[in-house]
Length: 331
Image (cartoon, rainbow, N blue to C red; front, side, top):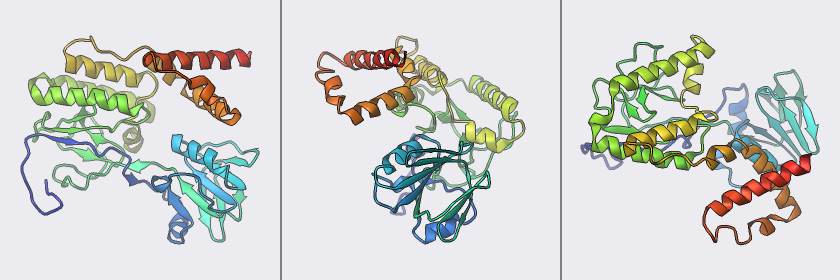
């Protein structure tokens, strides 16, 4: 590995922890590059808070950032157009929900996949995600391309821009020319609660570095092939779609994954994900909506006053009361 000062020191163990929120991903939509060059479009990597960017602003992206930015921009823009794949054509106050943009045209016009257009757009915010980027790792260690289909596992390590493959436990390279418990990638998973997951991965990395024999490479290779075949049953031979979904753990899967890491690092299952985490995570969208309503009505201080003074579980109890109050109000 070469450092910024030109030195190339040797290391026995390396943890790669720059995550996946560093190198912006831009869609290859026709005309977008001209908007960026003209200063009319910006990636959400540089977004910090709502700004007056004009009367009509487009926000692209269906992830948490896209929804949060669209909600915030409604307070400063006359009209916010939120573009998402498969979006329904719908107007809600000063918010316009639209589908995927297929072209950015001159003079502030955008064209959507249903053939409709919006004109006089002043600015576009791109909440379009990030690419996995590791410029400090040479291509003889990490090849920048989509890996071939498997089985068998490829004899090299690949970076598709969406995933690193093949990795045991989504962390350790399974590469015949490299000890699997010498290099570790942290924080590649998406669609997860990140920080508790980082802690579980950190524990597993320390354990593998300390006792590399505990990493059963044969079993890990088998699990990778099983996961590949599960995704292939959904996406067929589309290796790009498999790459895009490889590090996504939806629903309960992320909590099962953390429990497996705890079992590996602790040697048993004495440490597990507390029950309230998957319970609350499943209702995160409702909680976000309820909390925004409390902010709108000025009742947040009333709900959180004194909470936590008797321990962290008071926050869990408060959240359950919040959900119960919402559910009773819906009846």
